[in-house]
Image (cartoon, rainbow, N blue to C red):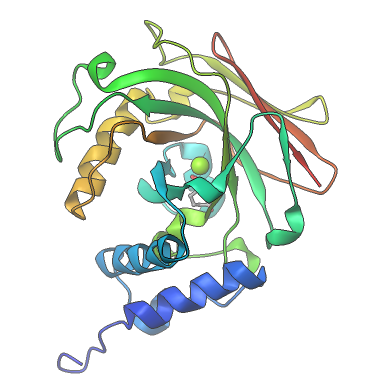
Length: 260
Ligand code: 0L1
Ligand code: MG
């Protein structure tokens, strides 16, 4: 306790979120009762992901969240956030996933970057091509561990920004322009969402700067060979057993996943 303020029990909160994901069972929101602010929430996220690493998973990248107006409006939160990706979250392009492992999964189309070097913390990545080896269309599977897929900003940060899985399509060299490519999300061959990479912070390259800056504040450094998910170009849609989803990004290609 400091005065009347109870310091959040980071390990206990991380344990609750970890168990919720393991049991695929939603829990009530935690932030208000625990007095979590965003900084404390990132500490919970770190402890949560540490539990995955302890059981043998490996960090393979970062994801940016809430980088578009559509996403901010969808969840009622208005700040860019970031989370951690591990190898166990990655699915093969064209592969399948058993949805019984999740609570109320959703899927969204993204752009992925492959890092060619480790940017200095706080480095503005002005020369984008010097830091990024390749770009790909991607899908992100998100699954809030909270009841009703509803949360405050510290809640969703603590919950590793709802990260649950991702798929990366074929890598290709960085094209000249990335700031206004058309993006479609198809479910069962039917277009359900349309958008543009412009929705990702105006230009998805900005997401890399944000990743370096925001992760750097927490002492986290992006590594060579890591994947950075820049953020969704449209709102997320529910992902249901039997669905075949495909992200189509103009000039970059497709990434797809089937739900079992
Ligand atoms: O990747 C995202 O933009 C998701 C961030 C968390 C909000 C959500 O779960 O939709
Ligand atoms: Mg996302």
